[in-house]
Amino acid sequence: MLGIIGGSGLYDVEGLKIIEEVSVSTPFGDPSDKYILAEYKGKKAVFLPRHGKGHKYPPHLINYRANIWGFRKLGVNKILSISAVGGINPLLKPGDFVISDQFIDFTKSRVSTFYEGILSKEDDTDFQDEVKQFLKDKRVVHIDVTNPFCPHMRSLIKDICEEKGYRHHTKGCYVATEGPRLETSAEIKMLSLIGGDIVGMTLVPEIVLARELNIHFASVNIVTNLAAGISQHNLTSEEVIDMMKEKTEDIKHLILEFIDKLPQQLNCSCGEVLSKAAI
Image (cartoon, rainbow, N blue to C red; front, side, top):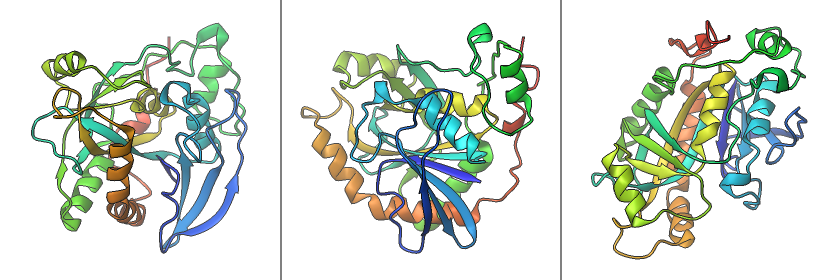
């Protein structure tokens, strides 16, 4: 089943049937909000507003572990992440879609693993898998993130963007910063020199935690503004919100097509991440 992470309102899509909203408890505390269980053309999907409805949580205070674990409890094995980002690469324009293929982590205070050795929480799901066994045995786990995003899901997003005629980029290195402040122009210059294409505050540890649970993960990023020092004016939250509103219909259509065309089984190795990862 597919999980979708994004801002509130993404579930308000014409043709999408809302089944129910459910609260999920986790060993890591409460998720950002209730999960919205929905259906489209006979396929089920689960939505979660990353920041909570009404944008209650700043990026550094989101309970990422609870959010991803809640998806696991609901049977989600694929996640599509929708994010607003700043553009670093000069080829990017506001309104562009970027399908990330790499990330660089500059976050500072976020827990980015479920596997903490002797401090690990117990698995509260009914699943009998590597995750449950590793947590039960208090194992330390080092996952491979050479290619962190699901190639099959990324390819499908690319095909949909091409079919819809959306301006998009099939690769992009997402630089994750701590927030909630925006970056300085000097920081953006540094990030461009090390290969960053876009900058945001939420991809990490979302993708890392999903990968630790053998969950396929892909990210669609909407460039809402040019980053500090590249933009000719001071940055505001207002321009981010305005661009996301402008792209709302495109995002919704992309999500519906993705739900419809996503196969049950994916031709990739994402589900094998935990193999030989535990010590």
